[in-house]
Image (cartoon, rainbow, N blue to C red; front, side, top):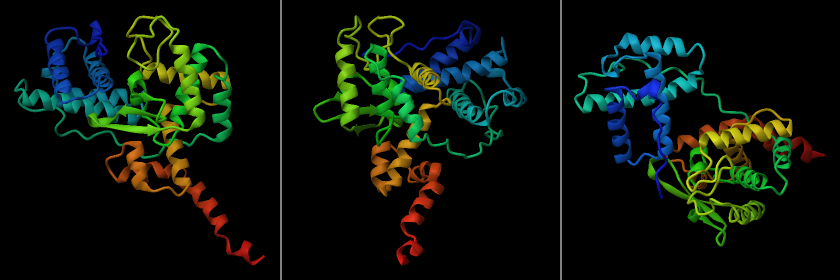
Length: 313
């Protein structure tokens, strides 16, 4: 399988010596077995810093330069976004120190932007039904989008990067499961139910008629029909936004569907251990974090089931 190419915008990282830094850092990331989607994210985060300090050698940036970047960008971008960029850029400068390109990281005494740890809202059943109805037709795109959305709703719901990285060979319609590549080069199998299996089967039949059916990727794009043309993280996110508009509902991010799937799992009194295996969590803190998304509603339902007053008649 050919790796997805990481484009380097000329106005960002294609000037010496910044291009050489990026190419070296990308080589380091690949040696560490980071996924191509992760590498694309690192590139985006570094390109933004290079854009802000246009024309400057990244190796000469100071603590004040970095602080100025964060002060300005936080006026337009969320703390969550900038916290992600902080971690990417910190890793880059630490790599530069290791490679003896710089003596010390300009970020070593900077604090990561503080993020309010508020989980995304759960998507209610009515919105999910409207979303599925918006892609209930028989066109190629409708078959594809229906299968993707239903897969997001399964227990073990893939991260959007995992969804974009699924290859056709990883889909097993005999066992009704799909294998995804998660964080840290880990893989896990996600089982799916009958309706998702039906949607996937219909999509695979439609996929086989496409000019680019020989592509190794499961989710084919309709923009072009070249062999390697497939839906990326951005493409899946945009698809979901488009379907939300068609359904007449508020915008839903893929991560909301993952939180919703986790909420449904815990609402059924399922175990945290099984959740960790299905959702690909390596820390036992993650089930608790995901479980917070609708903990109050689950508590209310549990309270009604356990009501002494109702039992007394």
